[in-house]
Image 1 (cartoon, rainbow, N blue to C red):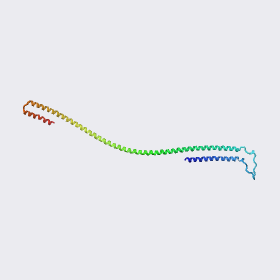
Image 2: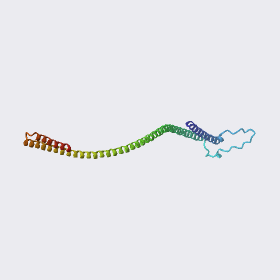
Image 3: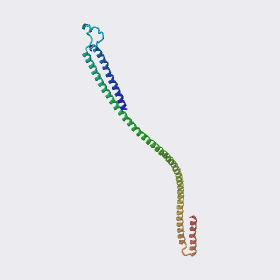
Image 4: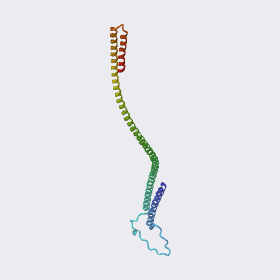
Amino acid sequence: MAKRKQRKGASKTDTSSRAGKSKPKTKTRSAAQASAPEAEPPSTRGVSVPAQPSPLDVPASLPNAATLLDELQQRCESLRQWQRQANEDVQARLVKIEQRENELDEATRQMEHDRTHLDLDLDALKRARLMFDKEKAQAEQTQQALEAERQHLERSRTELNDQKQELLDLRCEMDAEWSSQARVRRAQDSLAAALDADRSRVQELRLADSPGDPGAQASDQSADDAPGLSLTQAA
């Protein structure tokens, strides 16, 4: 692209240089036409030549050939300076254009590089999104399983609490039964102690009344056995 633009710039400079060169030609022609009166007259053989005018008849306002040549040289020099300046401007513009093209090429390469990285980042984002969706689905399944397990644990806890309450009620009943049995046992123990005290007292009294009568001893023995039977029946 830079070469094409340089060629275009070169063609422009060529046309400008040609234009600059063509202008002096016209001026040289006018100068030649102006200086033509000073050229030698053509051959006058066989031709009737009119009489030359007197020096007084030549107009005094006609420019001199040297003046015309100086003006032509000045104009050519100004044209050369203008052409040099134009060439310098064109070259500077070509350099700027080339720099701008290089910057655009670098920006294009950077944009392609960024686009490649962007495509890679988009692919990575898609893969990460797929992984996230998969993990989210697994997490939802795990949460559902945990919720079911929690509900099962709640039911089990409720059942355990019910069983615990039943056990507590049963323990209260057993404690009450044990208390009643303990009271019965204490009553039986006190009754047995009272019967033993009565038996020993009765034996002492009978022994004191008839110490030598064997029948009395037998009757005492039978009497001693009777409270024992009643104690066994009470137990």
